Image (cartoon, rainbow, N blue to C red; front, top):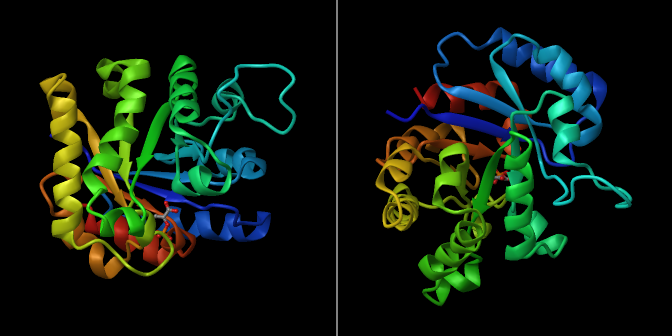
Length: 249
Ligand code: PEP
């Protein structure tokens, strides 16, 4: 049985005072939440969030990492640094990184490998654009994004990772994939992994992301291959995020 995971991606939002208020509200509202929960704040707040979450059961994650381990890479942050600040998870290949920072499949696969090399659990984000969906390319695009990582690290590496299917057209737009649309892509992702290793596939958590809200979360999370959510906007409002966590029960 896969334990559901709900992870909040704060993106480039936050400030010390607001972070403390948000986390206090989250910590005070965990009764009735039985899924695993993680939050991914911007780098400068990792230390603050780590101390506020100490011993709380809410895990800490980061939003990206360098593919390099150390050296002359101005502005970059290594996986080992994230581990030092208490991170368990790191997002890899978020569509905003792919689109706005030109991260391609090879770099994303290298980041995935770098995360695992230091014991971080990568959350590998996959998803098609609206144009790709309209051309009927959803399954081939997602399969190619996943294959780039599988080719680099091998299928067993997915036993220590999470995948997030996030249709680009649903991120931050208010448009959500229907539960049926999401489920068919999740099932295809699991089949692609199962073709290489059935045990890894059946244990793999595949999150859905893209305008998840309290109102649509339960139906999405009720699908056979949807094991939780990666939440952007709604992760910034404690009561919304908690309602989504409860929907994962
Ligand atoms: C995301 O950024 O990963 C995301 C899913 O955002 P939103 O929930 O705001 O669509």
